[in-house]
Length: 261
Length: 335
Image (tube, rainbow over all chains, first blue to last red; front, side, top):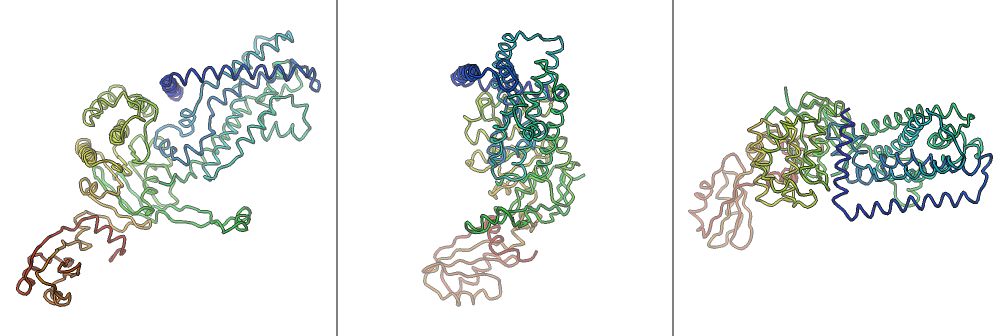
């Protein structure tokens, strides 16, 4: 309860800050829209050359791709932890965070969020809509409910994983370049999992479970029942990985050595 | 109940030892050598509610590490610690509601927000009731003369203006205990004075306990009831400031310019039975340091005047700063 109120307060402050730099805000908005438009065109162009990927039709692949953008943009908006090491460890802002009576991770997330990244979700929905319309895909009444559960689960899987990677900074202040690597691997979740060999499938399901961010839940929405169990497992995986992330974070805070001053 | 009660408080840091050269770097990759550094070494510290305590020490003496343990940022390696009745790191979120923290070199405010907005966010973070918030903010605004600053973004404030806002931010939830890490660093004399007056005032008005670290000993002279001095992670002095001067022989210094030049040994002969240290500065100028138990200036003069005629006299009171510097340089004579 208090957290959601705090979230709104932080959000309002964020908007106020953004509005202060009016021209910057406008430029950002225009670039965001252009970026999404380019993204959209890119997807359509790339896939217009392939009619089939393994057993998947072009529209199905585009649908999965569009679906992936939705949980991913939620992740990008609220788990913007890229500069954590630089800003909070080296510059020492974590000290300030730790003297405030709210969970440290929550504060860091609120201070670094970029809600404008949610514009990616709009692109995603547009891409999904276009593909569904092309395929004449019917939705059941419960599909939107599962959709919401799935995107939250997917964002939580992504978020948990990144919290874990970010927590490395709490144990050792040396820079790691593992985040961009993970970021690239994350993209593999955008494609049907049966195009990969067995090992990669296992990795994408259990070790770096990006298939839960994109493919598994999207296959459910496509009414493909081969991965039904996995799809249903998405919210659970979200819960597990997010909890793991928070656990590692808390452990890191215990280990935190403070910025030299 | 004590505001701060620490027993055997210790913090160790593990440091990676890098080897030399390329070969060493490769070996480090596979086999790391660690060295343990004890930043804070079994400190016992008790601070009563309402006290103002100055915490001093050289860079690297362990001041910041102690403060970070006391504020819950770092977990102690060992020892017992209770601050305001809480275990600072273990019960952090509850605990920090009862303390205020100002790090002089780091802002507690949001850089891009107007000062008022920063306060509003803090109000939410600490869940301060509306009425308390407005009453207290008005009071702080008045005392710290923040009225014209409230609508400005933090990044546009001068250092002195910012520091006043930082203090207000640290006190907005009416903490019982205030930690100040270098609160007057980089400020000009007038602002320093204002801040000291303000700190005294809140200490008297609300009974707020204050623990401050500083390099500026005049802060401590103006504020503290007690001084805790730290060296290499250990407390080497814990007591009043006047006693510190007395204990480490910070008597006054006498500068003499004589009519003619004298041999140092001859001058020393005059004051054989009292502890006065003669030093030849240049030409006919001498310095006499009075170190023993209460040797008076007049005593020295009465010994010298019959023999040598004096042209000019200057007396310099011992500065705490000099005493502290001497302690750092020469170590603790009896601790």
